[in-house]
Amino acid sequence: MSQFQNSLAFAQEMDANDPLKAFRDKFYIPTFHDKPIRYFTGNSLGLQPKATREYILEELDAWAKFGVEGHFLGKRPWFAYHENLTEKAAKIVGALPIEVVVTHSLTTNLHLLMVSFYRPVEKRTKILCEAKAFPSDQYALESQVKFHGLNLQENLVEVFPREGEQLIWEEDILAKIEELGDELALVMIGGVNYYTGQLFDMETITKAGHNVGAIVGFDLAHAAGNINLKLHDWGVDFAAWCGYKYLNSSPGGVSGMFVHERHAYNPELPRFAGWWGYDKETRFLMQPGFNPMKGAEGWQLSNAPVLGMAAHLASLDIFEEAGMERIGEKRDLITAYLEFVIDTISEKNKARCTFELITPRDKTKRGAQLSIMAQGQGKALFDALTEEGVVADWREPNVIRIAPAPLYTSFEDCYWFGQLLEKAIQ
Ligand SMILES: *Cc1c(COP(=O)(O)O)cnc(C)c1O
Image (cartoon, rainbow, N blue to C red; front, side, top):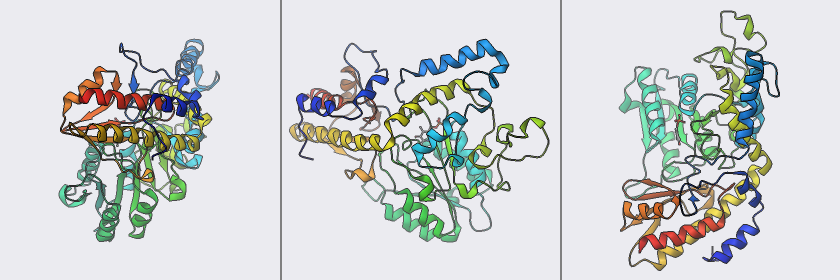
């Protein structure tokens, strides 16, 4: 991308021409350092929208004023609070409102969805996932297999990168799906790998899984609010994501789940049930015998944690205003600029240290995250960056993960990242 320049003036011009430039000011940029913070961990914990406080205070005030009556009184009655989030969340993941609900936390939701959609029968018992899945997903998958009394080695099948490589070849995933055929019960993959930043072609994987009669689900922790998703059109069976990474909805905040419309009207699907998944028209008759809500809402267990949901709403309102279309455009541009800056610094300092990009260079195969391997340097380099006010993420043995979250990261941040990287090498 030779239209870029590694200069402060150029970065500032990019910021001046950025259609989303006003959005940075809607967030608190951390200030805990004596140097300006360059925040590149929006893929881990998104920054706090300035409006979040007000949304939460509204609910605290409603609680103070109405007590239990807040379930039915006030601006956004708690009884149906989650409904305020549904359409906005659905837009972000490319779903129909009936296919989405915001509830619980991510790993909880993965389990609840697998209870319904991992149904090993006869020889169809296997789960296919990517090697190096996020640890929580690995444990969830393992325990699901064991929960059904099945042998882990045989039934949890991982697709690995090829010898000496970091990324997984999509054709290897497709070939494995084909090979497992009628033994494959579930394909369950992270849409964007948390470590490498690799984005998988979810539509093609879904088709391949369906071709052999398997169910296909995705963990979208690193994709929601980052990638332009079309879960409905792609035909994905189910998905789950968390609200606190690119979606900026408070530490450990509420999460979302997606269940495709084709499963929306099937009350016979086995599931772990709770009262909030019960048909809301008759929920308070408190009758025995579970009668689920139609669609994703039928997977809710508990009444809404309103304060966490208020934080989520504050952020979803920002996403709605910005629109995923524009967010996606800036994501590709700013990520390419950061890539250019790193390449430039790497080339200039190659006698000391080079940076190998693990993340695909093809923008259709990645989101806003770049994972770089520092050849010839260890943790000391990362610590030196931290000293200079860069907030990034370190993974042993020598990988730095950085994510220019499009809503609040500036091109100038990317320029300074390069300058501070160069200084840290010295
Ligand atoms: C962040 C992340 C999690 C975290 O799960 P929680 O239940 O929210 O703690 C799980 N899986 C993936 C892929 C993640 O990136």
